[in-house]
Length: 407
Image (tube, rainbow, N blue to C red; front, side, top):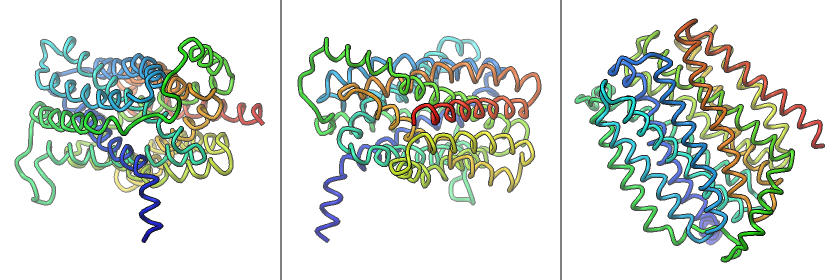
């Protein structure tokens, strides 16, 4: 009994911050399920909805860098930065309520910018906290953190599908308009933000209280000049491009081609997160033992294969199985890439390295929904599958080259 208490005492921060991360992802992923209904309600094209998704990615890129720098410089205040992540999401959902055909260009972009900024704001401070508190189990700790994210990615789509669709098996029958649902989620985001702000003094980065700013920027620059860090940023960028280009149009495909109900759409999308809950910490722990690049290479090649195979199993049980298999790798290799980047950075610049990692992913990923939107409008969903699987193949080649070079 004492051993269990000691274990939970030592890992209380890991599981607490991971639980918050899971709840945050429940909210940040929910907007993805709303996208097909926003597209339908506002009569948007694939490229137009892709533009909103692009603003989401660009905002994430822009927010990441100052978030990482502030995390490294103000190690005892990172809990406040994390709290603003949930606050931005809440404001974004509140704005979504007022979206219309006349104002979607202005309010739509503001809302999706807040979604992107809010979702990304969490990662640099949280990753820096965990990597410094659990240095010998870095990838495992990040894996647990992102496993909770996968849990949120699983529950969020189901929650939205049930609330939009009016229930499942007669349990709930009212149904909600996507605008009213956005208000409900907004309130929950604000509640999460308040809880984080209350407990923020306990969320700190282990290290010196004061930082020499000049030395910090010098070390950060040295870290970001390393070819190993640059390659990890590039690999994460490719993975993000695959993720954003595929998931947006998977949801639209489920609604427009397969004519699935909101509940069914949510369940299908949640399958990717479901298997990620299990495999994210497994890949992390495995990479702690065998190395980062072998796991990254395997994850990239399997991602490309599973996405491409969807063209041959685009509905029914075959689609369900392929989405479950895809979830084992698509999001699950993020902690491995992140841990690899942190491995090569100079101590004290972890937050900046993570911010650049996610910024690189967001910048390249921001173009992917637009390109996928063009393919979807012009050639259909199979063209999106081909495009994103080729991107994953590119990631495989990059990781193989790095694997050979970094030996």
